Length: 183
Ligand SMILES: [Mg+2]
View 1 (cartoon, protein in one colour):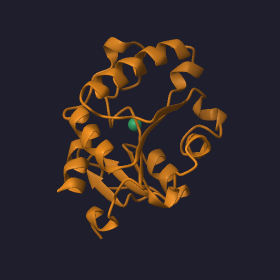
View 2 (cartoon, rainbow, N blue to C red):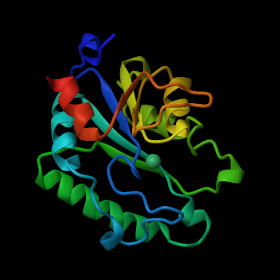
View 3 (cartoon, protein in one colour):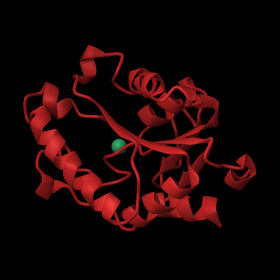
């Protein structure tokens, strides 16, 4: 099945992971300041296309740098303010950004692959239908998160082997996903 066959329209919702999908991942580190936040190529254009197709676009991001006290929630907020401002300047609309500040070992309900951030979105946007949702991420955690909720899953990257959770679709970038779905 191709993505186009799902007939994605405004009744659908899109969940985007942040690091490695929207901005460059900092290996073994965290984006703690706005100047460390760098969009991956074509991302503002991709989000512009996608927010014109999907009824609502959310960002769901694990940020345990807060739990590790390497950054504060205010630091994260200023990073997200910059991200949202730049996306909106390009005509891209993000409905909400959800983050989980907890450490991996806490296994907190809000930390992907657990479902908490999606359940929060459902509370705030009751029209949201997980069966008409797509989750896009660059780790198996993201794919597991989407699958647990019954979403279509999209992996961004070049991985050929998945340990437990096989994504429905694989693209090399968010822009490749956006142009495929729109074409
Ligand atoms: Mg990621």
